Image (tube, rainbow, N blue to C red; front, top):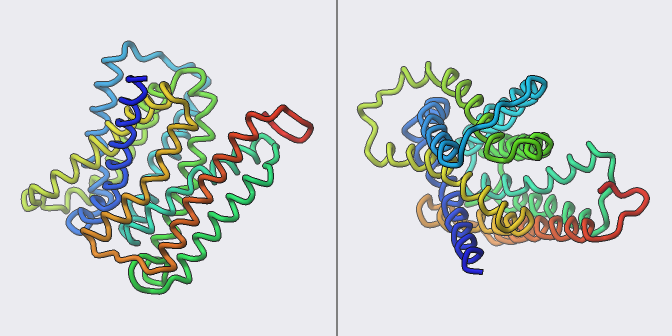
Length: 307
C-alpha cells in the first residue's frame, strides 16, 4: 500500500502542475506569442520523454502499417490540440479553459460509443446532460469574472475544440497503446507533433526579442514544457499502470478547481455565483459519466451494449 500512497501523492502533484499550467500559460502569453511559445516549450518536453525512454529501455520499432496512424495521431493529439489549446487559453480566462478542457472524458466516452456502435446507460446520459448544463450556467453567469461571454467566446469555442481533439486522440490511440504501450506511443506522437509545432512557430519566434524576456517568462516556458508536458505525462502513465485508468482519472476532477483558485488569486478572475455553480455541475457531471461507465463495465454484457 505504500507504493499506492506514493502514487496518490504523485497524482496530487500532477493536479497542481496541470491546474497551475493554465494560469502560467495565460500569464506568459502576454510576453510571447502562442506559436513562439509552443516552439520553445515542446523541445523541452521531447527531452524529458527521450530521457524516460532511455531509462526504461529500448524503444520498439513501429510496424510500417502503423506509421500512417501514428502520424495522424501526432497531428491530432499534438498539433491540432496544442494549437486549439494555446490560442484558446490566450483568448479566454484560465478558469474557463480548465473547466472546458475537463470535459474530455465526456467527449471521449461519446466518441468511443459512436465508433464502436455501442450504447450508453441512463447514468452516463445524466452525466452528459449535467456537464452541458454546467457549461450553460457559465454562459448565463454574466460578463464579469469567470464566464463565457462575447469577449471570451472565441477562446471558449477553441477550448471545446481542444477537448474534442484530445478526446479523439485518446480514443484513436487505444489500439496502438495496447500493442506498443503508452510511453512509446506518447513519445512517437509527441516527437512528430513537436517537429511540426516548431516549424510553424519559427517565423513568430524570429520576430520575438528573446533577450528581453524576463527570467520569470523563461521559468514559465520551462514549467510549461518540461513539467506540464514531460514530467506530467510520466506521472500520469505510471499512475495508470499502478492504479488503473478509472482511479487515476478521478484525480483529474481536481484540476479545474486548482485552476479556478489560482486564477482568482493571481489573475484576478473572480467567479460569480452562477459560475461557481456551473463549475460544480460540470465536475459533478464528469464524475457521474465516469461512475456510470464503470458500472456499465462491471455489469454483465447484454444485447445492445458494446464491451
